[in-house]
Amino acid sequence: SPKTIQAIREAIASYGHEVVDLEATQDLPLQLASTPVDVVFNIAEGFKGRSRESQVPSLLELLDIPYTGSDPAALSVSLDKAVAKRMVRTHGILTPDYLVMHTGKERLPKELGFPLLVKPVAEGTSKGVTKKSIVRTEDELREVAREIIAKYRQPALAEQYIAGREFTVGLLGERRPRARPPMELVFLDARDPTPVYSFDLKQDWSKEIRYEVPAKLGERELDRLEKAARETFAALGCRDVARIDFRIDAQGRIFFIECNPLPGLTPGWSDLVLIAQAAGIEYRALIGEILSFAIRRYQERERERERARRAHAAAEREH
Image (cartoon, rainbow, N blue to C red; front, top):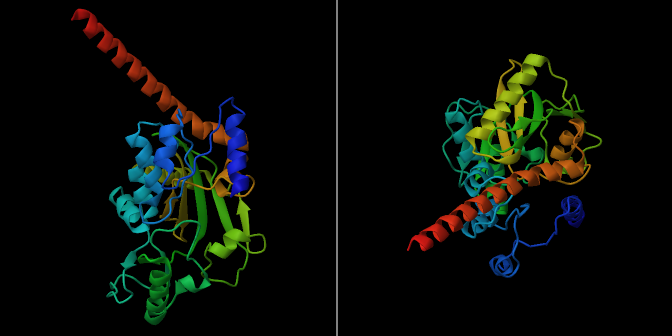
């Protein structure tokens, strides 16, 4: 939203940087060619396709412009929830059993038991997740899957519903990130056996959800959850910042749900901002920390260019 963009702009400017607004449209290559920038603070979601979040970073890499956040590969893998699940499973991280449905007519594997949660395979902000998303019969599954496929023009992901506590963990850092205090999403309607963090709840959560940050966890549970978050961050190749969702079942097993390497940054509202506040990191400092990683990469690039210039000048003198 314009309000969020303004907040990020003011935070960056407060460190003495000159801020230039660039919109991620088809004119962006021309804008970058005519507007020399040192570093890009990337918040571009893209327009379409399962690689949409990687479009701007790919262009910036082509132009050798440092930017904040994960690289194109990590952004593409994380947005496609099925690919992300396959990746984390190879690293020994639990994730619910699932099926990708391209038509709604797919044969159901025997190990996939109801209830299931059905959602678009490559959307964010819980788009496509509604009260209808929990299905308990094959007919319901196929109906909801067909609706999602038609509406979002992408496959539907049907995954085993994991009953238990839901957490989201924010991480900041390049390759060895620090996990911030986990946030628990406490569903207030005790009568609902299968609550989900739907799109509508994210927009108006005050009556049905309570955010607890830091979450009430024992020391061992906290260590296990933070370890799972760091391992997931590494498995997906994330960088600088990410927010990762988990569920813990009655047996204490930690299940990866999904990863957002381009998390929302709306002041006082986005999960990562609330998590940072609980860790004593004010909004300006959060933006500054994310930016600092890209600035370090910019400084490394400049040192490399200077070394290359000196080597070239030395070679010229010898000739």
